[in-house]
Image 1 (cartoon, rainbow, N blue to C red):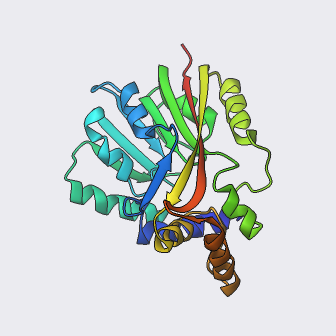
Image 2 (cartoon, helix red, strand yellow):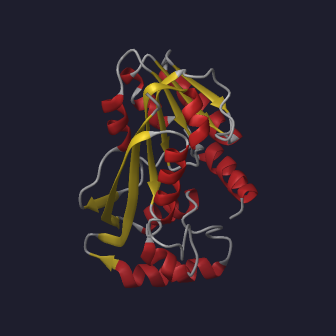
Length: 251
């Protein structure tokens, strides 16, 4: 998908679902982390936190007690509409949601103590501007080999055919060039078992793993063959691959 396709896709998903996959039943085997738990470990109660690509705001609403003020931004109108609804339901007074592009962060310089970004594009130089000195930036991103058996079955997919580690190397380089220090990265790759066909279809319809999934009958034929080949007693087998980067702003 090109950038326009992604924007239209996320607007559609944002209005209908936000970034909420809590109802998807999936069992994971292997060592992994909870990204926003890691974010809270870096927070003090007095901190200001910025979350880039916040989606429907589900994540930062769940950690609202960790900081003084939490601001979530997303370029998608649909996502921000859902985030506003979620905020109203939550009754949280210390969370704000704004429609904003990560390419241009319209905040004062040296404003946020913590910046987080999960599965979204970020721009290191923009983050460096709005982060306080010695502030912390954390990002979790999807590895190139995520859901690899699914992408092989379809012959297409998110980062399909891209060399493993390409995105991580790119982001580490950009952070270093923007002046960040103490840059660390960790990876996980776990086996996943989706419990039902409906769980897997929901995932594929609401993420860009397989671009334009479900628009042709052939997609469902491929999916049925995939399920036949990967159905186990534990569920429909695939994998999840993630990497996390933690970096400190200029001292």
